[in-house]
Image (cartoon, rainbow, N blue to C red; front, side, top):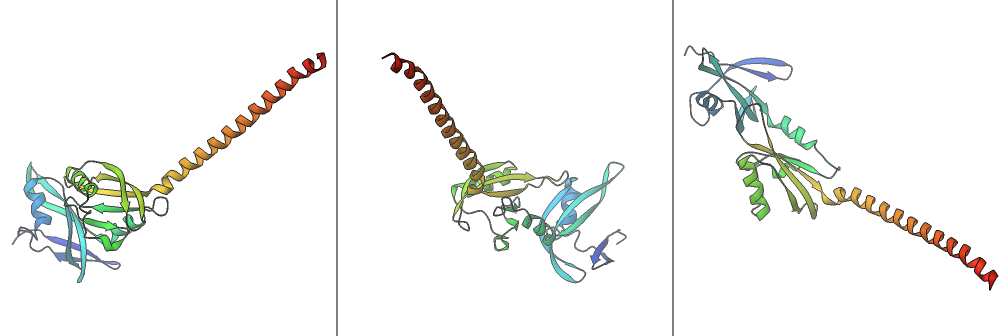
Length: 221
């Protein structure tokens, strides 16, 4: 076709050259068409492809190429979701907390619990609030119930930006309330202990003063 369409694939330690396919077909060719038509950096949701002959799910970051003010092509990178999953799995706040990566469509892309991948937040009021926050690209914070922990967790959802891409992905981090409040409880107990010691010291001082005042009076009587 006269088009420059190389696709470099990493296979083990080697890099192989292949050619792009379906880059002009809407849907399967969105990895090229979306950035080409919009003229903006694009972040695509995961899709199945073959890398070095093996099936893999990847997400794509694509950017338009301009020449003399005109868009003449697109370049991009496909990143295996397994790599992103490993990053998300490693986020373990307070050891028992976890993180989730949620797409603009409200679908879980990566999660500490792999069984949740591909699912959406539940249909509760809080779940709907989270989906709306993800769609609108804004932050959400609130307490939700976790069936897996059988306890409340404090969940923070914040938008994730990839370059200048307009896609709204969000990272949700769930923090166990018992761990969050543990330090507050320690501070409270420490304050109570110091308060009791202060009260005891004051009582001792008052008793000492009272005795020092009453002793001369007793002698005078």
